[in-house]
Length: 108
Image (cartoon, rainbow, N blue to C red; front, top):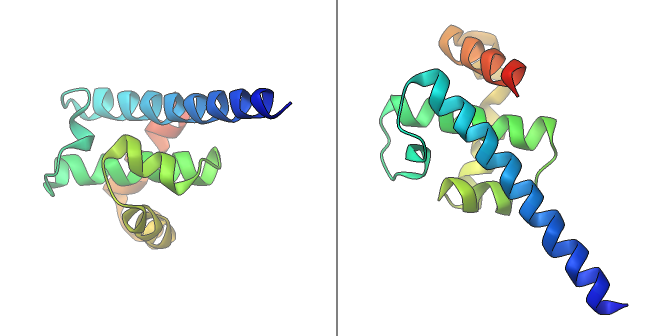
C-alpha cells in the first residue's frame, strides 16, 4: 500500500513538472527566446517577464506547488511567492505582462 502511494505521488509530481515545462515551452516560443532559457540566472526582462507569466499560470490556474515551479524554473520558492503576489497589479497595470499572460494562457 505504501509503495503504491509513493508511486502515485512521484507520478503526480512528474506530471506537474511536465505541465510547467510545457507552459515554459509555449512562453519561450511566443517570446522568441531559446527553449529552456527561463531557468537561466539572468534578470533580463526578456527572461524575467515570461518566467513570471509561466509561474503564475502554473500556480494560479493549475495549482502546482511552489516547490515544483521553483525547481523547473531554477528559482527559489520565495521568488514564486513574489511572482504570485505581484500578479494582480502586473495584470492590471502592465500591458506587456497582461498580453503575454493572455497569449500563453490561451495557448496552454
